[in-house]
Image 1 (cartoon, rainbow, N blue to C red):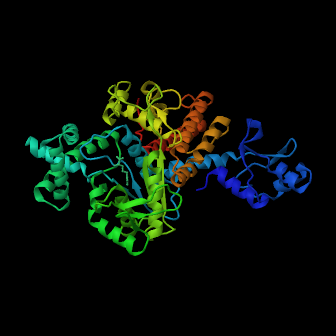
Image 2: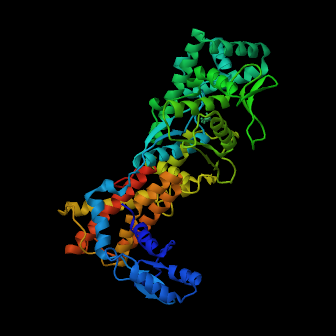
Image 3: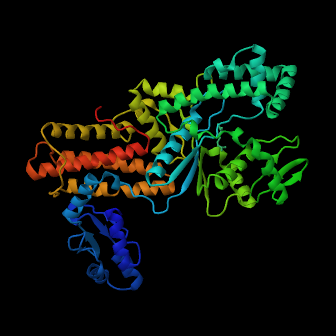
Length: 544
Ligand code: ARG
């Protein structure tokens, strides 16, 4: 269903030819919307604005939706929706709660590459945003009817495993018995020795070769390090309440067997050339060529991403690929996409997008670090927020702070402000949901069953109904533009409209049809808030 504003816009445009630019009316006596389209057309046509307005009012076909249109002042068109149309919106939500979200007419297969922590390292603040944002995209795109394939491109391959495995053997420990923090400590001991001990470094390098050639003992230790890391990652995912599971794992090592053919294909087509012993691709507009294969024959981070794109399009049949990483990787992905287009692995009709996000800052405005100057661990951030509120509320606070302003912007992790139940915060929205749930619970205890809307006279209840009608459109927009802050703003505005409604329209204290109608508005608002929060990955509690 189109939202009422969208529907009206369409009907006006059929007559005016241009966007009527409907604006919310500034006062209730002006109706619900105003348009200055007549003034704009009058200028262009050199005719009096009121004359144009009269023509528009006579020709626009909105009698089913609106009271008779009115002309005000120099030629504004005032639009007032019929109360029964607004009532119909609310009743529609109650009878078919699923109808609040518009299903797309063109379902796609969408790969979302997000989270991607690194083996033998705990997730840190950098992984917080990719995981939360990617999870939100997953929820929104799934809700509108796309098939989402999350791909968790974990860092499970690379030369660091040479020194990790060598350190395990030197210490004679059982890698499978490590916890993730212990594996990270091992990593630190190993890299210290790698820097300080030339003999160890040499053994570590030979160990990389053994890993690559599939030496069973080396592979077994490598696999054990992955397994213990996954336990840690999955704990974090559970704590974050995100929808990533082992079935979405597609780490860097998944592409090992594809790399030689990626390089060969690029070279055969002339896309890649040998330059000083390395295989590289020159792409217009980039400072440096992409290194596909190093002069020593080794493969790096870039070719793995090329292989991943090829696999996602060719084998997974993705129509759209979305990468969620910090903004500093945007050149890398632009270059990966460009090379894949040149190679024919990324056809023009497959959309590839890198969504780069800003940093998490401390209250001092600097990148959030521990006292020792290390990147903050994700688990520690959750602990800090939980000092202020229950886990459910703390998590809502973090997710909302992460999603509610433009993703590219840095944001300040201010636990006290984020967890407040007033202001533009996640907990405020949870509270709005809990409060409206409480009203409905009371009514139910007094014998209320689901009712319909028959009376909708007050401006505050009409404004709320109108706001509810826009939900589907906002969700569709977020699915398109990948800007979750629009959904956050919408939900905040809905909660604000709900509190004006409470102030002006007594619910439990009213009687008869008015009470029935207002309870129905409450129930519909609860549905919209609940669905909206769920799309952000935030739990909507019934009590708080
Ligand atoms: N593992 C990388 C990191 O922690 C992120 C990988 C992002 N995804 C990708 N396909 N390159 O920074």
